[in-house]
Image 1 (tube, helix red, strand yellow):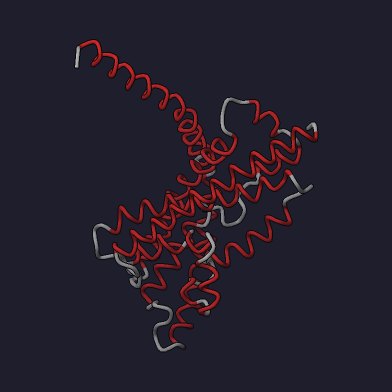
Image 2 (image 1 turned 180 degrees about the horizontal axis):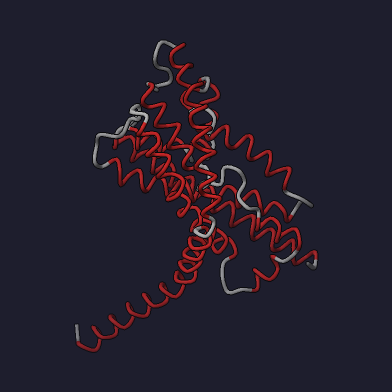
Length: 288
């Protein structure tokens, strides 16, 4: 290969890297902005930790009594695994948008302000997700970490024994955040077809969080309901990182679980993309 050909190849790779960096950088900045924005709500974070801790101990009393009534274990859960599930899941609730998030996008759709978002040189879906994911990642610091410490202080919390489980769990937590926020995005963009999405959002919060295993782990569901839950994306939001971190499933099983999570993330983002395109077409036809 001549020096001229080699220089052209290097120049082409540099141009490709520059275009990739230019395309990704705005979303990275939105993620950082979401992280910083969420970091300003320290009082809310402290109140959230207190509330989650109280509910954590309430759930602990109820679910440990359930295990005791079942002979000490049920659905693959021992008391130690159950305590891990309780405090790890409580710490993730804000990050996955279990209570519906702030509904900012839904409100912009309702008022028609989303039309301005479509004029910006950014993908509306990715821009919205980048901002909320940044805030969701920050929420793990003042909420998930203290709750993990509180759970560990009970001396009943189980942790994975395999070193590989922890980086795998970190990937699983990130996928849980993207999946949870992606589902919430799909709910909010339904505002292109209805006057107000609050009823749909309430239905999503009640049904979705139940199927996620927010109240009791999916493993304690009746067999038929557990199978239904696992056929939806909801069962792959809270349970995988909890099961991996607690050691309820080993690293090999955890890798398979993470792969399923990733597949659901792709599917949900694709659904959000389709809904966004259809919603934009409807907005233009309506003249909004």
